[in-house]
Length: 263
Ligand code: G3P
Ligand code: CA
Picture 1 (tube, protein in one colour):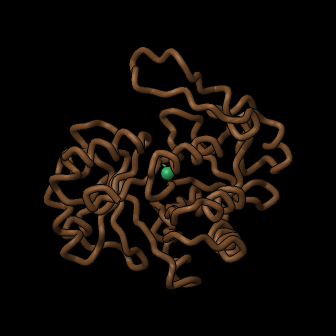
Picture 2 (cartoon, protein in one colour):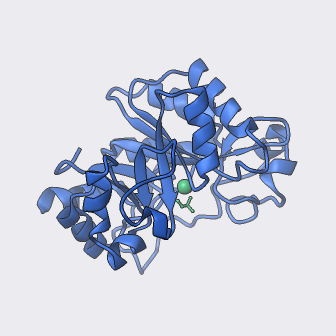
């Protein structure tokens, strides 16, 4: 925790390492992140893997939708080499992350991520986002809860989603699990800081706060902590600190943590 604002690593330390790989998460933990964010999608054979896009095309050397591929197909792909490491002149503070080839390139299952968190010396939280939950009519949430029950971790776990329905399914099945309602923009009915039933934490985009900084106080007054994404720019870090948000979700956990400490 830095200046009372938790730093959550978005897809791991994804500025420096290929997003959603074991390498990116190990780096985020080493960088002092309080929690790790990951997106989960279901494969054709029912496994939850940490992949953001519907298709694997951008972040691997393969093609096709995660939902139409089996875990064995994903294990054939390289999820790391698309990201060049050194020589990024636009971001001179970017680091080269040393990691075994397999950890840098292999698709990451949710189980493996939970094992990493379980073996970490200090408690690290998890913020798990259900992607495309409507397609699977509850199977993503059901599988997620099974995997969490089989792989307990010491830190806090929250489920995040843009889908209120997804969070309601989680709440109904596991009332003790924290939930975060992600919001790209504020619907008129949520401008007062209220959230859909089933959500504890407000998860607005940083754009929401740039337009409507008073939202943080309204949500907190309504009893909802505020976790903001994706906070990479120094001016946005300062805005979040001024407004007293509860957590920032960032691709650059070390840089943002250091910045918060200096404020
Ligand atoms: O942490 C919330 C944020 O990850 C939502 O957007 O597209 O990066 O999953 P996206
Ligand atoms: Ca996400």
